[in-house]
Length: 188
Image 1 (cartoon, helix red, strand yellow):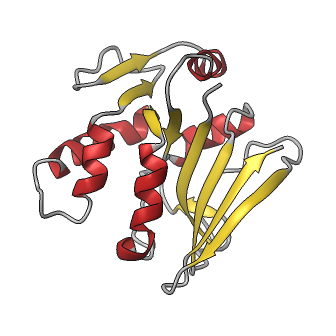
Image 2: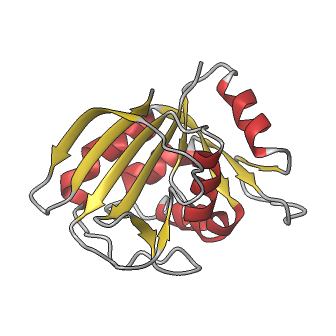
Image 3: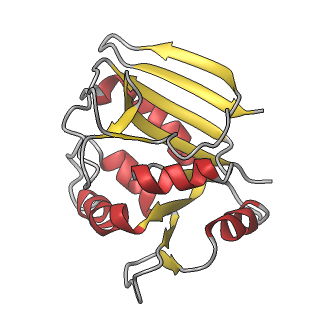
């Protein structure tokens, strides 16, 4: 069975963004430190699932980055270009982007169906409300959280829809010179 993996930047106090558009200007830029980890986890998946709000800017950003071989994110863009992208939306009628499928069905049913298909794992990177819905439905199998050395005091949390505790098992933690700490958990 394929796993659904979340990779996300999070503040020390548990927020992923500070506004309606998932603003992340607060994220510690330490690409040279986390790059290898990010590339390896991205390469472990052949599919990305994305919520509509993030997809509008996210997919074009990576397509544009793919045209710039000197961009620090170019290697990641090459991996993402080969991944199938499934955009979940209740409001979009069509989406015409290369290697992208619009999914209007039930989130839980469709993700479980994807997990039962052959292939590499599935990745989700955000946005906050989409990830909250996945967590609420207990669909995420692994959390790869980059905890940034900043407290925001407010913002959009990703665990805000839990009705009860969600016990996680720590697989590993990595501390980076920048102050970022990676926490890799799996669900029990």
